[in-house]
Structure formats: structure tokens, C-alpha cells
Image (cartoon, rainbow, N blue to C red; front, side, top):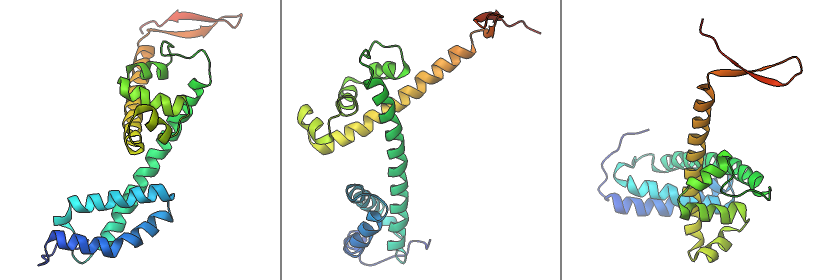
Length: 196
């Protein structure tokens, strides 16, 4: 990448010209890689990053630099989407069992209980009740965009809580001091480990 070169136009004017020149090509680039709604979000995020860093834009390589930013933003969206899909699948497993409630001792139910009430509400409306973001927005009295933002935050929090709970379970399991062995009848029996 070329170093930043001085430009007499000023960063705000350069940014406006760059936006006019690069918006459509970046949108087309993004739409070839992700769905239209995500592509709109990608381009908005790319220009948000460019705006914050407008004093650092490389003069000779502005547009290629934006393509690099778009590539990274798309990769982040795709990783986030895969994580969300896995989390949604886990939530559907719990939702499909009629006896499931917050008191259930599974890691997922425990994580749901630990979530902030606002996060729990939005995630259960969308993942548990099957509402779209638009429908959840009506239920919550906010915009669809706000639901998307709240879902992102709630999923991140839930994912972190799940990791924490699973790590706690692994620590508890490894500090038990014994292990399972099977007797002649095939039934598990607990035996203590002896120090050597």
C-alpha cells in the first residue's frame, strides 16, 4: 500500500469525491458476494470506516484500499453469520422441546437465564418464537434496525455466556477426582484415582 501523500483538497472533499466514485462499484462487488441487504450493510460499513480514517486514506490507492476493507467486512459478516446459524440451531433444539424453560439445567438454558432481560427478550422473540426482525420490532416498540443491533449484541453475549458455562462445566468435570469404569455387568461404576 502506498504511504499517505498530502492532498490540497482536504480530507472531507476527498472523501465526498471518493464516495461518488466508488459507491456503485463497491456495491456491485459486495452484491456478487453476499445478498443485497447484507451488501448494503457492507458498503455502509466500508464508508463508515473510510470516514473515520479519512485523514489516513492513501491518495493513490483509495479505491483498491476500499475494496480491501470491503473484503474484510464481508468476511466478518460471513463469520458472524455462521456463528449465528450455529447458535440459532442450538436455540431451535431447545425451543422444539415443549418442557424447556429457563429453569432447565442445560448450558443453553442457563446462559439464557444469565442474559440481560432485554437481550433475552429479543433473542427469544426471534429464535424461540420465530418472529422476523420486523415482527419483533413491532412487539418491542422499536425499529427493525434496532432489533438487528440488539440481536447482534444478544447473540454475542449469549455466545460468551455459553463458552463460559461450558468452560465451567469442563473445569468441574476435570476436577472430580474419579473416573467412570464399567463392571462385569456393563454398568458404570465410580472408581477413585490413586496417586502414583
